[in-house]
Image (cartoon, rainbow, N blue to C red; front, top):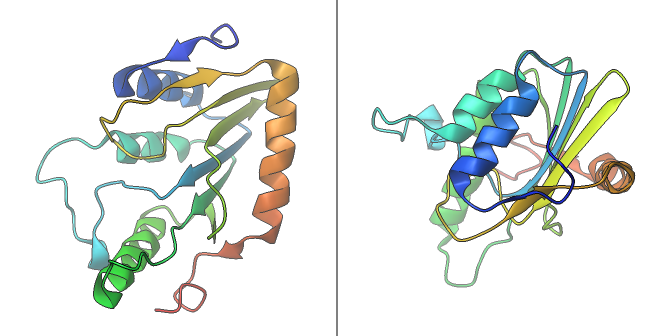
Amino acid sequence: MAKPLSPFITEDQHFSRLMYEVKGGLDNVCIATYNIYAGIGAGGKDLTKGRSNKVREFLNLLKKSKKVKILVGLPKKHPAESDNDFRIRKQRLLDTTKHFPSFDWRFVTDSHLKCYVFEKRKSICCISGGRNLSDSKYTDVSFVVPRKAAHKIKSLFSRVFTGAKKITKRNLKL
C-alpha cells in the first residue's frame, strides 16, 4: 500500500493505484463519487467508440470482490439543462448499474463525497480527494489517507449510504 497522503496528481496515477488495490479481489469495497461515467449511454449504448474506458475496466476488476457498494451523488437538474437531457443523464446512470448488477448501487442528490475504501481481511486502504469515478482529464488530486482517517471516512460513507435510495427506474423517476 502507498504511504498516507501520497498524492496522485494525474488521472493515470489515480487509476493505476485503484487498479493495484483491487487486483485479486477484496472483501469489501465502498465507493462514493459525484456522478459517474463508464462510457455507457442511455439504452446501454457503448459510447467508447472502441477506446478503452478506465472506469469500466476498474468496475470490471471489482467484480472479483465479495461486496461492492457504490454511492453516486446525482446532481439535481440544472436550470439550463433541458428536461430531456436530465432524463438521459438519469437513464445513463441506471443503464450503467445494469452492467454491474452484483454491486449495491445507491444515489443521493446532496453529496459531493469522493472516496474509495478497500478492505481485505483486517487491512483497510482509503483513497480520497477530488476525483470522481470518471475518466476526466481535469486537474485534480487524490491521495491515500492515514488508517485512522480511513475508518472515519468509511463511517461517513456508511451513514450516507444507509440513507440513500437504490438506483431504480422508480427512484430516479424515469
